[in-house]
Image (tube, rainbow over all chains, first blue to last red; front, side, top):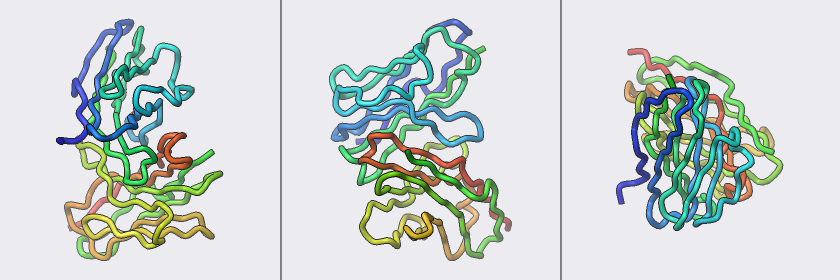
Length: 114
Length: 114
C-alpha cells in the first residue's frame, strides 16, 4: 500500500466552474477525512466518513461543498460554482476507527480559482 | 470543543542546539495529541502521538514530547537540531476518537541556522 493518494495534484479553474477531487485512502482504513489548508494556516477540518457513512458534515464551508464515499473506499469532494476564496490546498486523511494509530495524510490537491 | 495554541509562529536555532516548540491545548474530553511536520511542497508527516498511554512520547528523527495534563501542554523537543529539521510543525488535538476531526494549531516555522 502506497499511502493516501489524491488526484489531481493541481487544479486551475475559472470562477463559477465546478470541480471534483478524488481521494484513495489506505485500504484497511475505514475512516476518511477532508481538510482545507490556506496559505500560512493549519489544515481546517471539513468532513469525515466512517465506511460509506458521512458522520460529520456541519463543518463544510458552505452548501457549495459536498463529499461522497459511495462504497466505503475512495471519496470525492466537489465544489460547485467556485469562488476565488476557494483557492487552497485540499487534504485527505485516513485512519483506523478511532485514530489511535494516527492519521495518514495525502499530498493534497492545490486548487487555484482564476 | 477543542483548540490548540502554538505559542511561537517562528523559532530559530543553531544547528546542533536543542529545539523546543511549545503547544497548549484545550478540550472538553480526554485528548489525543499529535505533532505533524510539513516540509515545503510536501505532505504532512506524523512525528509522534499521545493517546493516553505513557506521557513521554518518542517519535521519529529524535523528536519527543511530554503530555502535561496539569499544564495542558504538549511541547515538542529535540536535543540537537539538524539542518533537515527546517520545516513547519503543527500541534494537533483530537477528541472522541476523531469524531470532531483533528484541530490543528497555526504552525511553528522552525529555522535552523548553520
